[in-house]
Amino acid sequence: MANRTDGAGTFLFGGQGATTQPFVDAAGGVGYRGISGERRTEMGTDLPLTVNGDGVFMTARTGNGVFQTSAGAGVTSAWIDNGRVSNPAALTGSTYTLQFSVSGGATTYAVLRDGNPTAVTAAPYVSGQDITVDGMTFRVSGAPANGNTFTVAPSTSTLSIFDALDRASGQLATAGRSNAQIAQANTDALRDIDQSMAQLQGARAVAGEMLVRIDGETSRLDDQKLANQIQRSSAEDLDMTEAISKFQNMQTGYDAALKSYSMVQRLSLFEYLRT
Figure 1: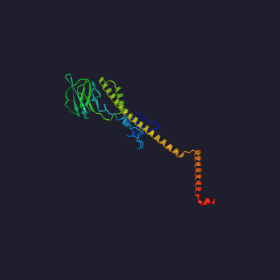
Figure 2: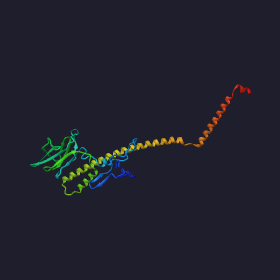
Figure 3: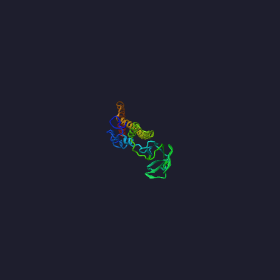
Figure 4: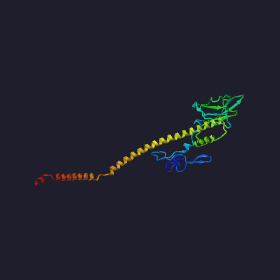
């Protein structure tokens, strides 16, 4: 679909390089080879003829669109959900790390902000309970081991739908994973696919808006063309029979007018006496 053409050899998602296949499936994954931007019509209408495929397929927002949660390396017995924004005014844009400690059968966690300690140093952990940090709320479930970490970082516009699908299929094909690893992988995969679909839906909405504009311009141009054809027809088209008849009538009237004027010009006392 990303390499679809309009039937005339123009790649719909090729951006400004609409004659070259924009997406190439290489060893490291699908890459964009088009030219970012759009081909557009003249300034009078300024309508797009192509779509910037890089913006549609390769630059969705990571995580939930505001921040991204992820499990650290070696986490096999717990997982973290996608989280949500609970207080937009409290967001800082920093990166947070949850560090878990297990001692004497009790599990606690500390929160680091950009690698620095915060006031949360030994908070008791309860599986599935909300954890709120600077306007962000998320849940860690399962039984984190001593030293396990989870990261909460700001979202970026770097999510590729191709990479998301590759990761999802690769994780599903990986054997020997724990239940927590499977839950984490599925949570991340569904989140990334949802974000990619939201990006595609946004592009679809923009394309729909452009189609409405194009229909409006087409209607306007059709009306203008019809008006021009009517004016041209009025100037060029002629009913010869009607035109000759009108011309003869006008010629007869003109001759009669000339004769009447000539007769009036000769009316004088001398002409009257002479006759």
